[in-house]
Structure formats: C-alpha cells, structure tokens
Amino acid sequence: MSKTFFPELYELIPASEPYLSGTEYKVSVGLEKWDDKYVPVTKVQMVFDGTISGAKSPSYPLGTEDHLKVALAIDRLVAKKMGNLNEGNQEE
Image (tube, rainbow, N blue to C red; front, side, top):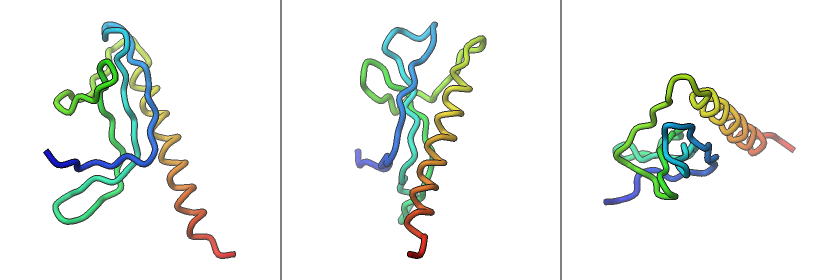
C-alpha cells in the first residue's frame, strides 16, 4: 500500500482508560495525497503499542479529557504550522 499521509509536525497524547496502557492518539499536521494533489490537513490516528492503526478511527471515552487534549494539540500544531508558513512569507 502506498503512503498517502506525510506528517510534518505531530504530538503523541496518551489515551485514558479503558484503553490499554501504551495507547496513544497521534495528532499531526501534514500533507495528504488527494487524487493528484497534496492537501495540508490535520489528522488524528490511534497508536497501539507504538504502531499506528490505519483501520481504527479515534474514539474518545466519555468522562475523560481525551477529546479536549486532542483538540488542544490540534490547536497548538496548527498555530505552529501557520506561524512557520507566515514566517516564510515575511519580507525582509
């Protein structure tokens, strides 16, 4: 299978119980291939024992702050990426 997502920045957020210990959310900003072009996107993937699961969509257990932690990570990464883009566009 060919790779279609290319993360540029990412954070790993530990998942709460009832997930097993070692489960994480990988929150990324990067480029994803859509047909014949690359589109900048945010992506959240599940990581089990250090391996990204392409088949499992993220789920956030109610009664935890997982959804908030992931949302804040997305905000941080987008701000960092957009800051990097803006820095590259500044005139000297």
